[in-house]
Image (tube, rainbow, N blue to C red; front, side, top):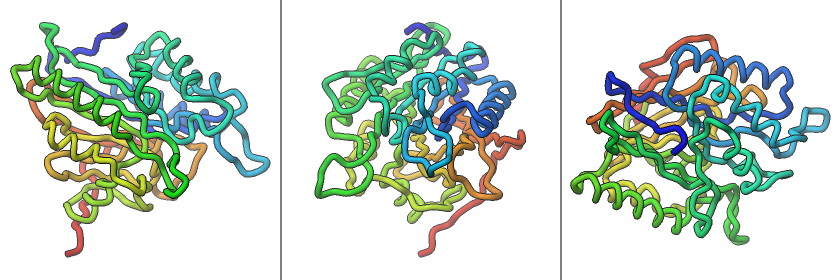
Length: 316
């Protein structure tokens, strides 16, 4: 790996999650987004930045609104906040990154040209572009934690099923193989792991309905209409402690289901919908070497840090 990921001397590793940046043309709203990301990175100084999809917006816009006419340039502009600071960064694609004008393969070509990215193209024989796994090592260079990245697609490719796409069986098989290999090389003990994708899994609705959650749910969970079984595979493999997604801009809650914390990021971009009183921001994640746990908090555009989100208890 060009930029090895390693726990710090204090045994921590900190990740900033930016999601739904929706960069278009570098205009006023994009500059607000840039300032937010700069402020977050300068305040938190993370070890890794993860963009969880819709970094750029290539979809339909209302006539008269700015277009993303140069998607490759827009993407480079969006990730410059990490590049100029020399912070390693990873990305998964969302449904709007390659909606028009550009393909995922073309966008990944641009990703891999950036000096500080740790993203990978991933296996060409499975669905999606950008399914990959990264390892965080300890001071001795041994694998101490794992990060999984999944391409959650765009919309269903089956004409009789309407709605968003899902993480496919071959992607899940790839994950279980990677997980098994890491476990085997770690004295049969699963490595503490996190997973990142754009579109939430159906279990994000289930955890809200069944468990105590922390944060806000101001819109529907816009997941795929079918459940392909990724969450079940993660439960069975026993490595993933938490998952992180975006897509639903005014949801930011997390809750634990069957030992896995399902978390939304905090929408970052100004060139897209939001809600008054729900400022843009980022989710922070901190791993601790040797522990199967992590901390997470929000940092908002005004610099406010939220460590304790409002509690939601499901109605019985």
